[in-house]
Length: 281
Image 1 (cartoon, rainbow, N blue to C red):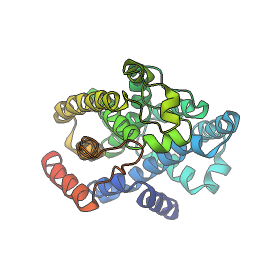
Image 2 (image 1 turned 180 degrees about the vertical axis):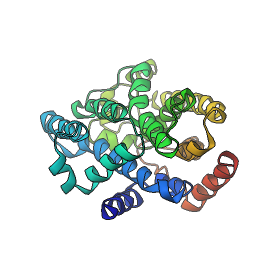
Image 3 (image 1 turned 120 degrees about the horizontal axis):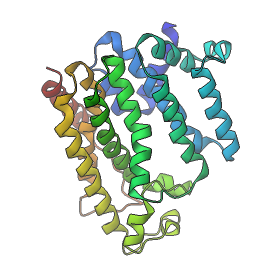
Image 4 (image 1 turned 135 degrees about the vertical axis):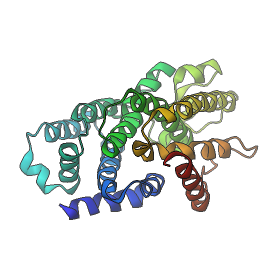
Protein backbone atom coordinates (compact mmCIF):
# COMPACT_ATOMS: atom_id res chain seq x y z
CA UNK A 1 0.00 0.00 0.00
CA UNK A 2 2.92 2.36 0.61
CA UNK A 3 3.73 2.13 -3.11
CA UNK A 4 0.19 3.22 -3.97
CA UNK A 5 0.56 6.39 -1.90
CA UNK A 6 4.03 7.00 -3.36
CA UNK A 7 2.48 6.76 -6.83
CA UNK A 8 -0.09 9.43 -5.89
CA UNK A 9 2.62 11.65 -4.44
CA UNK A 10 4.63 11.52 -7.65
CA UNK A 11 1.55 12.20 -9.74
CA UNK A 12 0.76 15.34 -7.74
CA UNK A 13 4.40 16.46 -7.65
CA UNK A 14 4.62 16.27 -11.45
CA UNK A 15 1.20 17.67 -12.37
CA UNK A 16 0.05 19.97 -9.57
CA UNK A 17 3.04 21.63 -7.98
CA UNK A 18 0.93 24.17 -6.06
CA UNK A 19 -0.98 21.56 -4.10
CA UNK A 20 2.12 19.44 -3.71
CA UNK A 21 3.90 22.37 -2.07
CA UNK A 22 0.86 23.19 0.07
CA UNK A 23 0.65 19.58 1.30
CA UNK A 24 4.18 19.86 2.73
CA UNK A 25 2.71 22.02 5.51
CA UNK A 26 0.35 19.24 6.60
CA UNK A 27 1.47 16.70 9.24
CA UNK A 28 3.63 14.00 7.65
CA UNK A 29 1.21 11.23 8.59
CA UNK A 30 -1.64 13.00 6.76
CA UNK A 31 0.13 13.88 3.52
CA UNK A 32 -0.59 10.50 1.95
CA UNK A 33 -4.33 11.14 2.23
CA UNK A 34 -3.94 14.57 0.63
CA UNK A 35 -1.87 13.13 -2.21
CA UNK A 36 -4.52 10.46 -2.83
CA UNK A 37 -7.29 13.07 -3.00
CA UNK A 38 -5.31 15.44 -5.21
CA UNK A 39 -4.29 12.61 -7.55
CA UNK A 40 -7.93 11.54 -7.75
CA UNK A 41 -8.85 15.13 -8.64
CA UNK A 42 -6.27 15.12 -11.45
CA UNK A 43 -7.61 11.83 -12.77
CA UNK A 44 -11.28 12.80 -12.81
CA UNK A 45 -10.71 16.37 -14.01
CA UNK A 46 -8.60 15.05 -16.88
CA UNK A 47 -11.12 12.57 -18.26
CA UNK A 48 -12.94 15.16 -20.36
CA UNK A 49 -9.73 16.08 -22.16
CA UNK A 50 -8.75 12.45 -22.78
CA UNK A 51 -11.95 11.08 -24.29
CA UNK A 52 -13.43 11.88 -27.70
CA UNK A 53 -16.99 10.76 -26.95
CA UNK A 54 -19.05 11.58 -23.84
CA UNK A 55 -20.09 7.95 -23.39
CA UNK A 56 -16.47 6.87 -22.97
CA UNK A 57 -16.10 9.46 -20.22
CA UNK A 58 -19.38 8.46 -18.58
CA UNK A 59 -18.17 4.85 -18.44
CA UNK A 60 -14.95 5.93 -16.76
CA UNK A 61 -16.81 8.03 -14.22
CA UNK A 62 -19.16 5.14 -13.52
CA UNK A 63 -16.19 2.85 -12.92
CA UNK A 64 -15.01 5.23 -10.19
CA UNK A 65 -18.49 5.38 -8.63
CA UNK A 66 -18.52 1.59 -8.45
CA UNK A 67 -15.02 1.52 -6.98
CA UNK A 68 -16.15 3.85 -4.19
CA UNK A 69 -19.25 1.71 -3.64
CA UNK A 70 -17.01 -1.34 -3.15
CA UNK A 71 -18.28 -3.12 -6.25
CA UNK A 72 -14.89 -3.44 -7.98
CA UNK A 73 -12.61 -4.36 -5.11
CA UNK A 74 -10.25 -6.56 -7.14
CA UNK A 75 -9.87 -3.98 -9.90
CA UNK A 76 -9.36 -1.24 -7.32
CA UNK A 77 -6.54 -3.17 -5.68
CA UNK A 78 -4.79 -3.36 -9.07
CA UNK A 79 -4.91 0.42 -9.49
CA UNK A 80 -2.50 2.36 -7.24
CA UNK A 81 -4.71 5.44 -7.30
CA UNK A 82 -7.93 3.56 -6.57
CA UNK A 83 -6.27 1.55 -3.80
CA UNK A 84 -4.90 4.68 -2.12
CA UNK A 85 -8.20 6.52 -2.48
CA UNK A 86 -10.27 3.66 -1.04
CA UNK A 87 -7.94 3.31 1.93
CA UNK A 88 -8.08 7.07 2.49
CA UNK A 89 -11.88 7.05 2.37
CA UNK A 90 -12.02 4.19 4.88
CA UNK A 91 -9.27 5.28 7.25
CA UNK A 92 -9.50 9.06 7.30
CA UNK A 93 -13.29 9.46 7.62
CA UNK A 94 -13.44 11.02 4.17
CA UNK A 95 -17.02 11.24 2.88
CA UNK A 96 -17.76 8.84 0.02
CA UNK A 97 -20.90 10.88 -0.65
CA UNK A 98 -18.76 13.95 -1.30
CA UNK A 99 -16.42 11.93 -3.51
CA UNK A 100 -19.32 10.65 -5.62
CA UNK A 101 -20.77 14.17 -5.80
CA UNK A 102 -17.38 15.32 -7.08
CA UNK A 103 -17.50 12.69 -9.83
CA UNK A 104 -21.05 13.69 -10.77
CA UNK A 105 -20.10 17.37 -11.01
CA UNK A 106 -17.30 16.58 -13.46
CA UNK A 107 -19.76 14.93 -15.87
CA UNK A 108 -20.25 18.48 -17.18
CA UNK A 109 -16.75 18.37 -18.66
CA UNK A 110 -17.67 15.57 -21.07
CA UNK A 111 -20.18 17.46 -23.17
CA UNK A 112 -18.18 20.59 -24.08
CA UNK A 113 -21.18 22.85 -23.52
CA UNK A 114 -20.56 26.45 -22.44
CA UNK A 115 -21.06 27.20 -18.74
CA UNK A 116 -24.29 29.18 -18.95
CA UNK A 117 -24.48 31.35 -15.83
CA UNK A 118 -22.49 32.53 -12.85
CA UNK A 119 -24.75 30.42 -10.62
CA UNK A 120 -23.96 27.35 -12.74
CA UNK A 121 -20.24 27.98 -12.41
CA UNK A 122 -20.46 28.50 -8.66
CA UNK A 123 -22.34 25.23 -8.25
CA UNK A 124 -19.80 23.41 -10.44
CA UNK A 125 -16.84 24.89 -8.56
CA UNK A 126 -18.32 24.01 -5.15
CA UNK A 127 -18.86 20.45 -6.32
CA UNK A 128 -15.38 20.04 -7.80
CA UNK A 129 -12.56 22.20 -6.43
CA UNK A 130 -14.52 23.08 -3.29
CA UNK A 131 -15.38 19.44 -2.60
CA UNK A 132 -11.72 18.40 -2.82
CA UNK A 133 -10.76 21.17 -0.37
CA UNK A 134 -13.47 20.01 2.03
CA UNK A 135 -12.41 16.38 1.67
CA UNK A 136 -8.77 17.33 2.28
CA UNK A 137 -9.83 19.23 5.40
CA UNK A 138 -11.72 16.19 6.66
CA UNK A 139 -8.66 14.02 6.03
CA UNK A 140 -6.68 16.41 8.25
CA UNK A 141 -9.35 16.79 10.94
CA UNK A 142 -12.22 14.32 10.75
CA UNK A 143 -14.60 16.40 12.90
CA UNK A 144 -17.58 17.52 10.80
CA UNK A 145 -17.98 21.28 10.97
CA UNK A 146 -20.00 23.83 9.05
CA UNK A 147 -17.03 26.19 8.99
CA UNK A 148 -15.02 23.90 6.73
CA UNK A 149 -17.89 23.39 4.29
CA UNK A 150 -18.59 27.12 4.01
CA UNK A 151 -15.00 28.23 3.50
CA UNK A 152 -14.31 25.38 1.05
CA UNK A 153 -17.27 26.51 -1.04
CA UNK A 154 -15.99 30.06 -1.45
CA UNK A 155 -12.37 28.93 -1.74
CA UNK A 156 -13.33 26.41 -4.39
CA UNK A 157 -15.07 29.07 -6.48
CA UNK A 158 -12.18 31.52 -6.20
CA UNK A 159 -9.59 28.87 -7.06
CA UNK A 160 -11.58 27.27 -9.89
CA UNK A 161 -12.35 30.64 -11.46
CA UNK A 162 -8.72 31.71 -11.23
CA UNK A 163 -7.71 28.43 -12.90
CA UNK A 164 -10.33 28.83 -15.65
CA UNK A 165 -9.09 32.35 -16.36
CA UNK A 166 -5.45 31.25 -16.36
CA UNK A 167 -6.09 28.42 -18.80
CA UNK A 168 -8.58 30.07 -21.14
CA UNK A 169 -6.40 29.38 -24.20
CA UNK A 170 -5.95 25.69 -23.36
CA UNK A 171 -9.67 25.21 -22.75
CA UNK A 172 -10.57 27.09 -25.94
CA UNK A 173 -8.38 24.75 -27.97
CA UNK A 174 -10.62 21.89 -26.74
CA UNK A 175 -13.80 23.90 -27.43
CA UNK A 176 -14.50 23.95 -23.73
CA UNK A 177 -15.78 27.09 -22.00
CA UNK A 178 -15.94 27.08 -18.21
CA UNK A 179 -16.26 30.86 -17.96
CA UNK A 180 -19.94 31.86 -17.53
CA UNK A 181 -21.37 32.71 -20.93
CA UNK A 182 -23.77 35.25 -19.43
CA UNK A 183 -20.84 37.44 -18.33
CA UNK A 184 -19.22 37.19 -21.75
CA UNK A 185 -22.53 38.00 -23.49
CA UNK A 186 -22.95 41.08 -21.33
CA UNK A 187 -19.83 42.42 -23.07
CA UNK A 188 -20.73 41.21 -26.55
CA UNK A 189 -18.47 38.15 -26.53
CA UNK A 190 -19.74 34.89 -28.01
CA UNK A 191 -18.41 31.40 -27.19
CA UNK A 192 -17.11 31.09 -30.76
CA UNK A 193 -14.95 34.17 -30.18
CA UNK A 194 -13.25 32.31 -27.34
CA UNK A 195 -13.00 29.00 -29.19
CA UNK A 196 -11.27 30.72 -32.10
CA UNK A 197 -8.85 32.56 -29.81
CA UNK A 198 -10.22 35.85 -31.06
CA UNK A 199 -9.75 38.74 -28.62
CA UNK A 200 -13.16 40.35 -29.18
CA UNK A 201 -13.51 43.96 -28.06
CA UNK A 202 -15.44 43.05 -24.94
CA UNK A 203 -13.26 40.15 -23.82
CA UNK A 204 -10.91 42.07 -21.54
CA UNK A 205 -13.78 43.82 -19.68
CA UNK A 206 -15.55 40.47 -19.31
CA UNK A 207 -12.44 38.85 -17.86
CA UNK A 208 -12.04 41.83 -15.51
CA UNK A 209 -15.56 41.21 -14.21
CA UNK A 210 -14.74 37.56 -13.66
CA UNK A 211 -11.56 38.41 -11.78
CA UNK A 212 -13.71 40.65 -9.60
CA UNK A 213 -15.99 37.69 -8.91
CA UNK A 214 -12.97 35.55 -8.01
CA UNK A 215 -11.75 38.26 -5.61
CA UNK A 216 -15.20 38.45 -4.01
CA UNK A 217 -15.18 34.74 -3.20
CA UNK A 218 -11.52 34.95 -2.15
CA UNK A 219 -12.40 37.64 0.40
CA UNK A 220 -15.40 35.66 1.66
CA UNK A 221 -13.22 32.56 2.10
CA UNK A 222 -10.48 34.46 3.94
CA UNK A 223 -13.04 35.89 6.37
CA UNK A 224 -14.23 32.37 7.16
CA UNK A 225 -10.83 30.70 7.62
CA UNK A 226 -10.80 31.43 11.41
CA UNK A 227 -13.94 29.27 11.75
CA UNK A 228 -11.99 26.23 10.53
CA UNK A 229 -9.99 24.22 13.09
CA UNK A 230 -6.25 24.94 12.63
CA UNK A 231 -5.59 21.24 12.02
CA UNK A 232 -7.68 21.37 8.82
CA UNK A 233 -6.38 24.65 7.40
CA UNK A 234 -3.51 23.17 5.39
CA UNK A 235 -6.21 22.00 2.98
CA UNK A 236 -7.02 25.65 2.27
CA UNK A 237 -3.46 26.84 1.63
CA UNK A 238 -3.74 26.75 -2.20
CA UNK A 239 -6.19 29.63 -1.82
CA UNK A 240 -3.26 31.85 -0.83
CA UNK A 241 -1.87 31.60 -4.37
CA UNK A 242 -5.00 32.91 -6.09
CA UNK A 243 -4.08 36.62 -5.63
CA UNK A 244 -0.70 36.02 -7.29
CA UNK A 245 -2.34 34.63 -10.42
CA UNK A 246 -5.05 37.28 -10.52
CA UNK A 247 -2.41 40.03 -10.22
CA UNK A 248 -0.51 38.58 -13.18
CA UNK A 249 -3.68 38.79 -15.27
CA UNK A 250 -4.18 42.43 -14.28
CA UNK A 251 -0.91 43.66 -15.76
CA UNK A 252 -1.07 46.00 -18.75
CA UNK A 253 0.73 43.51 -21.01
CA UNK A 254 -1.84 40.73 -20.42
CA UNK A 255 -3.17 39.03 -23.55
CA UNK A 256 -5.69 36.28 -22.72
CA UNK A 257 -4.64 33.85 -25.46
CA UNK A 258 -0.92 34.57 -25.45
CA UNK A 259 0.30 35.50 -21.95
CA UNK A 260 1.47 32.55 -19.82
CA UNK A 261 0.03 33.07 -16.35
CA UNK A 262 3.00 31.88 -14.34
CA UNK A 263 4.44 32.85 -10.97
CA UNK A 264 8.00 31.84 -10.01
CA UNK A 265 8.07 28.86 -7.69
CA UNK A 266 10.04 30.76 -5.04
CA UNK A 267 7.25 33.34 -4.82
CA UNK A 268 4.62 30.63 -4.48
CA UNK A 269 6.63 28.85 -1.80
CA UNK A 270 7.14 32.09 0.10
CA UNK A 271 3.44 32.92 -0.04
CA UNK A 272 2.51 29.44 1.18
CA UNK A 273 5.07 29.62 3.99
CA UNK A 274 3.84 32.99 5.20
CA UNK A 275 0.21 31.89 5.04
CA UNK A 276 0.97 28.66 6.86
CA UNK A 277 2.67 30.59 9.65
CA UNK A 278 -0.46 32.71 10.05
CA UNK A 279 -3.07 29.96 9.70
CA UNK A 280 -1.59 26.84 11.20
CA UNK A 281 -0.41 28.12 14.60
